[in-house]
Image (cartoon, one colour):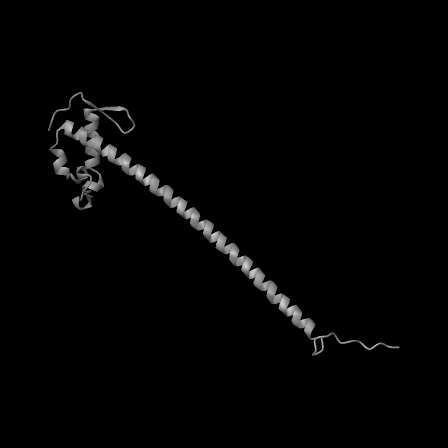
Length: 145
């Protein structure tokens, strides 16, 4: 293992880390649960950098680790941008779905009211038909003279 030098590398927030801080961060990453079982590794064809095993990382020099760190930061930014775009699309699709469901609910409510109106109208017409004679005319009440 190389002895730490005074080289500096940028942190994710843009501040500079000295080599010991970079190594400490690397150790934290290697001790995370993700690296306990190598079957959890995701190997991306377009990003071979992600396919490193913990034992391989331990053999890299500080400059190689810094380069790897910077490349991983770029990947993280790209994936974050993709994630944000996909989440925005999902939210847009959910809103569209809610809007369509609201429209369908309102349409069904209007159709039910129209149906109910026509049923009530038929009932009122049948009730007034009972007072009519078979020829459809209102019976005349005899006048007393």
